[in-house]
Image (cartoon, rainbow, N blue to C red; front, side):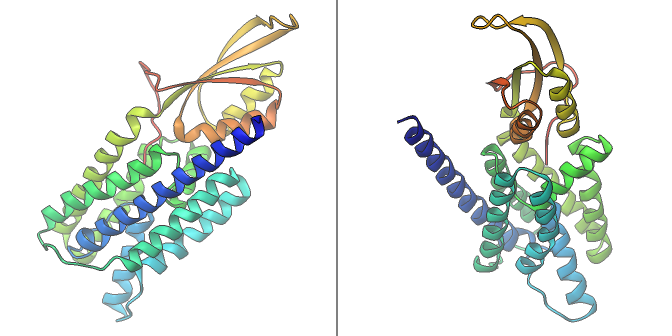
Length: 292
């Protein structure tokens, strides 16, 4: 009965995620094909780089490449790396979301509702940000660049926000060079709006407190530092009521998106550890928000 219940819960969770991926892909394709692309506005991430490649080939070589195909191909190296180094379930759902987004971009028609760059920047940013926030809120990575940002963060210790700013800065400069700097400002406006909407939907709900009860605290802490770069508080001399054996309680605060990384760390360090998760906790002081 327990196994049946667990299987049913897994099926329901996967169905929910697939539904969210469908909605994300549809909304993102609408933002790109009806607002960003018609007004020559670049968005952030791999989609923005795909637009750059598309424009360069069209403008300089007279070759028209599909943005959806470029987008998919640029995601492949990140997905391969993620498959080797990260949680396989996350990578599988990322692959599904990338595939769905690519198909939606190619299927949704490019309808020019308006060429006013400010309107396109605002509405494109709002719709695109809503799609990203919806996906992230449900624990779904929206592209391989998410994996790339995680890797850079692990290597450098830089915040997600600062890494994203550098990437989006490159895109904005490229927009200015290719279309003129007024379009760089429109692209920047759209990226800011998209980020704010994503933040409104996702960021405010993402903090989670983890209490880890373990007999192997050093191993667990080492794994947490490698995978999460989060601070850990140690509570010594805890005692199990059943066996009266001494244990250690570790306390850390993570983001919802990092939950799978926490699970990986626990499985690697101490598969017998007990973990209690408290959702939607509030923090005061320095906390590195996991934003995209």
